[in-house]
Image (tube, rainbow, N blue to C red; front, side):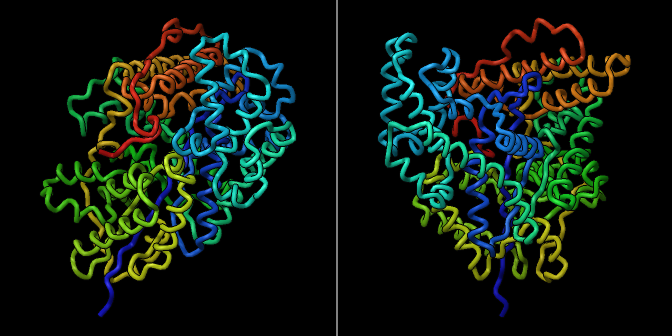
Length: 568
């Protein structure tokens, strides 16, 4: 008797918005290189250590653009990230007030429970800062250059991947040293950051060339595509949604195609082959978007299970059948691009819950949940379970950056007798040979939505988000008029186009709203408005006064600092 099997597709999504100021070429926020040295390096190392483990790594092109830009900075020794430059500043007693404020502002931005408190020397720096801060801003001037040197060193040590620490024992010696870090200590750390960041794309390309990892893509600057194409898409899953004042984003479908074409082109240039599939930004999908994917020759796309539930409900499928129907690919209309839908619960368990568990218990629970799914599906059918989630932000909340969880998870999966790991590409390639593969589901249409609640409520539908859309749509109207007028030469058009792409990112709309932390909301609010201001400058137009006014202030403490959200 043949053992029943389950196909598991584990997909990690890697993404950072563009943090560059296109006018000065400086980075306004440091998250790209920090996640590179901690998370992207660790994720590659775990896969390299488990060669029988197949997975998908989805890289947003604008993240890869920035990784290449950082590699160039290290190569040419021209640092355009203020925090990274501060790490190398010879005399930190001579910093300006603005530099001091920047260092003190950034170097405690992390999850203190896993990245500060475990290290007594770093924790002491945090306590000294809090003591000085309570005395007023002037008291911060008494924090010496050596304090700043130790703080910068500790922050970068805390953001170093666990696999990197295990590869370079001298990092552990720095951690043991604890304080009094020298300029040479900081230079050594800076050099290592450069080696790690510069080596990332070649490492992932090697994993892809081996067939172990599939690298997929996302429209270039991570736009929330169905909304860009049609504001009314938000009402398909949320009929009461309040829409922006303007009727839609001008030329939205053309803009989405622009992001898609750029993603396919740059992916092919970097990895030698075009991507087989795509994770649309935030799993935001619609029937019209699948049509674009189909025209571009993509084999697969994916979204959240609530989108499938809404779509099945729209065609009359009983709710009781929907869980069973989730574990198969779907064809939308007659498009060749197949759609997969994530298991929200298992994805959220990794993203939010297992960080609180002992790694061994978490892995056993995950495997058991897959066994339950297998035995709840029809006899002689091999379900395909898609677990798709953020591949960077979750690990900050795990002990040791998730080292033991990922190591035990991959060990359990690559040796499991009836759980077979796949990429989407490898699954589709072997599907015809699998006599027990589930039938492809058929959907006459998708109810447009995202992986968050099955709606677009995270990006549109409340006053702050709608105002942001109106500001963007107005800027696009002006962009179109200027381009038609012939007032810009080819180089100026190229600069304005890149700036517009940056403004179209979904990330700005994610943060607006009172449910996110004030500090993060205000940071992204300033970035978004600065991007729009720069667009007007490039178009040689007066900057509207409205762009001097904050869009949103935030105010609440969100789970994971607002960087991640549960699916339901």
